[in-house]
Length: 345
Image 1 (cartoon, rainbow, N blue to C red):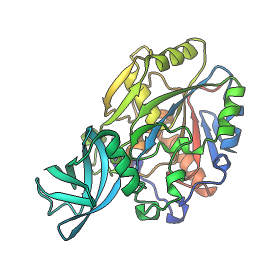
Image 2: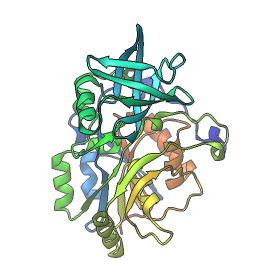
Image 3: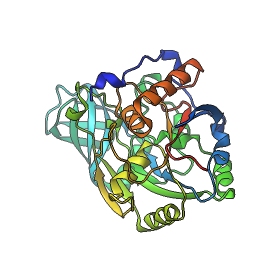
Image 4: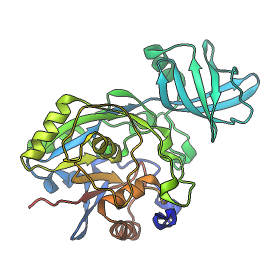
């Protein structure tokens, strides 16, 4: 398809700079085959039914943005894909003068060597520590990797909590699974009290999720890869809920992409522990997911293409038009929509 088909205008003032307070106060646009309805995230439990199973991404965002020096020159890097215990792919700025063998110092006794250069400012880095020691150094010296449309990516101390889900546990993401940011312990308890199941999977979201689509045709776009895990226990719970007539509710596009990567043609979910670069566009036949809770996405983005595949391009354009006219807040810290392909009876 033509990438221009997924374009739309969005006024800059509609991009949320901070999340709603409290989190459950965010607005939620319900999108079904029958139409649109305005609501709030706090009402979610009443829109689902006992027996449905919600699938959350429990990845935890690490402070993946580092400021350093190559000699006297300043360098900023944003880690985006772990390739080893001591090695990451990263986007560097400026990257033009970096060469393999260069050393970047981030703090006294904390440095990395440039191992290779890729395209579009990408470099391969090997740090002087690994595993938990490297993660500890990132916690000390790194900053949260806010997307560039929020305060130009400049995070502050508040973002350490704001840009993290309340159920985050598996360290490794460099971007938040933003639909999960709306949940509070109270909302999760309310869902459980209604008999709605909760299962976690892990997809370590990469900074590549913010890369623009630079081709004219979706067939020519190369999707970034992200590492995901679906355990045998998660498969058993989701398959059982679906067999009993419950709907599979993916919380966020990251959960959906991982579930669809791990499902077979018959809609059975299987254990998964590897990278996925699944790219979902209109015409894709969904194998498993019935309902998607997701934020509002950028024009011409792979995520807007995904939701258009899920509900139909014209329906999603109408939904986004309604959201703009109604003052919804967009993107990572913004409001969300509940997309229902199969409605509860």
